[in-house]
Length: 417
Ligand SMILES: Cc1ncc(COP(=O)(O)O)c(C=O)c1O
Ligand SMILES: N[C@@H](CCCC[NH3+])C(=O)O
Image: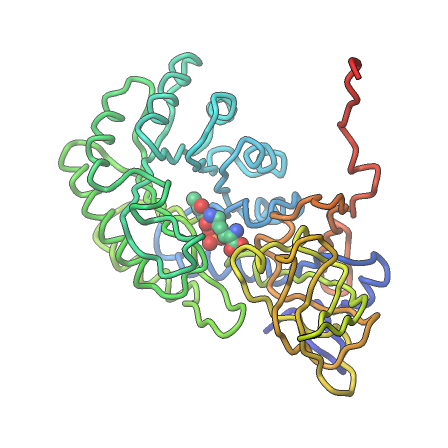
């Protein structure tokens, strides 16, 4: 059951016509379905129902406080990569002891915040970071719970820019070096080894790479056990892909089965960090078709959302289905769907047929719930879009559209000027 669907040629989110929301709040606009978000959480939770598990939703995919609060109410933890995400998570009511903290460049202030909050674990990405965390824990009179992020050198078979588990990537500790790092961690007096972690990439559409990574960390866990280093948590990262176009990613069930099979004889709590799979298809971006510019070689379908609102097509060549919010009769239009930003990389689609549309029509950019608003910016001094949650026949603004005053907030003219 899809919560974005057409009824009499009008696109609905749950029971609300998308056009009604846009008429009220303007464009560009992000709309999320409460029912889809709930369903995605439940699918993961049920899929891993037979093993001890914690779903640490990956905040980076969508950090809106209302979404974090929804997940907190459902009992999720959080995967964070910055002090800012940690702050947002705590503010939304995620219990600190369900928060895992990854990232290669944790600063002293961030480490202190995490230690003082009492997080579940630091996912440590280098030997140097391990020393830094130990030093801060010692200074604060605490013991830092840590797991080491292993770089298993597995090809996630995804876009190279979002692949993280290969030797050439900056992430994690090479598997050849990780036993030494565990030994060091075990001997440090202000860290406590609690887990193993990996995250091999994002938008992964087959189970093979996950299984390969699992096999590798499982043998590591066994080796560590033999050395008297116990592991409570196995953090399998995120990365499960979604359907944008014609991909057929595994369902959470199939993913869970593949992962759990590897650890069937290994009593351990599985930590999951899904981001995209939780929110990606729970959101759309709505934009208005402003002008049709008939260029020398192609049409430019100029819309009021740009790469500052949704950057994925520009930086990964990512595909997002674009369709009319209200379907009309007529010949379909083909062209580049472009925004108002002064960059040639400012496009939402290239040479795309988007149905019968005329200037003034609304377009829905599908699957925009993950890495949409979260990666948006004020480039070209464009206020950031509004975000809305739909539940049944009701909708509510969960982040107001920025205004021009917001753009200069915090700016100061130095007194010496
Ligand atoms: C450490 C870590 N965990 C989880 C995620 C979430 O990934 P995804 O949105 O692909 O599930 C990411 C992003 O790729 C990540 O870097
Ligand atoms: N931001 C990327 C995914 C990277 C995930 C973060 N490690 C995307 O939009 O697909």
